[in-house]
Length: 349
Image (cartoon, rainbow, N blue to C red):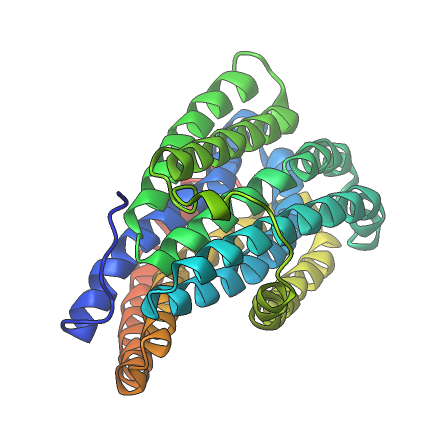
């Protein structure tokens, strides 16, 4: 069986910390896809490559925002049915989440493939980085289905109380991504296109491993009647009700970053590359808060499903305290080590 952690009993702060830590490591490794691309390309290609991937990554963040936001609804609903010990509700939610993820990934893929070139022109991507940015984005868009699929499976596992398995999946993928980055960008000289191939290949492998894990451990596959696919509009509506506002909120935030990038692009390749490095560090700095937020989402969901309203409220309050404390520590760390962190990405002139 999966390594599920009961979130309905025991110390709330301790359970949040224990549950959130693997999520933090998984978030770091998942973001390392893009960071690894920038590190390798920054050293192999230079500022042009950094500017290209940096601008493309803004669109990637918007795609990921839609994906994470929509699948977050699955975490909440699965957690509620887990707290209520409703296995039928869990299985039906899984089916609807899988359907929603498939449809969403196809729509996002079509829209992103159509829109990325006009957007790059609107954002004034430096001319010497434009083609590299397009080469990178075209390949990344084709791997959107893997991002949706992986996050859908992991949202289910988190709702069930398993935060370790997603870490294992993304850990394997991160290693593959780094190795492919080094080989494709370096010796094979594929540049930004090589980095994109490395990313979608590792994401695809991560998705396949997560699906195999669900099947191997018979999660939602152990009861014969759950194997037959049926529409459950109430479950689908519940997922969308939670996931859509979350996705919209995240898209708005990342669109703001996109607009800032567009303004800075007008100052040339070096400034664009430097700002993109700063954004990567900023993204990394926010991960502890995201991990605790994901943990409290699962805990509050299970508590609500089990009727433990007071424990759910306590979890939310403790989450706020932990996030404020962690944010202060991270901000001070970034301020103290800003220069060494920036230099990791190579020259930014």
